[in-house]
Length: 339
Image (cartoon, rainbow, N blue to C red; front, side, top):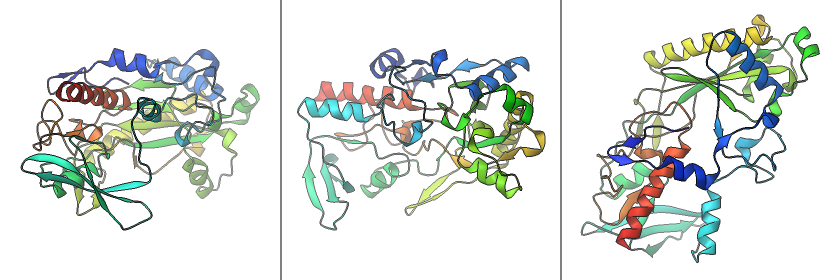
């Protein structure tokens, strides 16, 4: 989904990104029965249901429900597509390698200290430019280790829960559903501080069993409640501290209430409703533009750039991949001008 059209004065070229990675709403042929039931229920209750933009090639999709674990048919775009293109253009890709330190001297980046993941023998790799994209949990640590500013006390995670339950016997007869194998989050309902979207969580059957309900995956229907959480997480000394604030808890409770009502209207037994524990979906905000980097996404060390979710100014409360790719392309454009 698109976030802000502009971040810190940087105009984001979403149309170019969407074209490059093949973003489009899912066709009806890939809309599962469980998702259809949720969509019809929400529409019946007066909510505005939208198709979630996806980068999935419909002709390759086998609907196995394992989108988040790596697509077995390569129907789903991944950032590896960019890596493969870079290799074809002559880039060397070093895998299974841990970057331990970014080397900065005299205000300029000189390279990185890295080691094989199975070894303690580190070596210096010289570079005229370094693009740091270690994610919101690791990027601020590497910046601080290099003596550069970051914002490690502004962590957000797009906190989410999944509310679910068991469909009634009557609904089972009327619907041929296998929700756990459907493409997750193919529709959504946008609210001010959260979104609702169909989602089968592996923890839902476990939560049902803890309540004395044994249900097959094919009998479970669920909705994710994903919120724009407060930036109150902290990364300190390699550890992450991120709780649920009172404000966030209120939003989660509001979303859970609406999700539960939609599920019951879709045919879920009210007595079976359960929720997963809160989890973080999209860590970000720990190397913000204006704090860690300038509008070129360059740090105080010349030649060192950041291009990941650490840059985001606030929680999007929705999938941020388009924004991250757009920011990375902005950094690439800057690098092309400099080198």
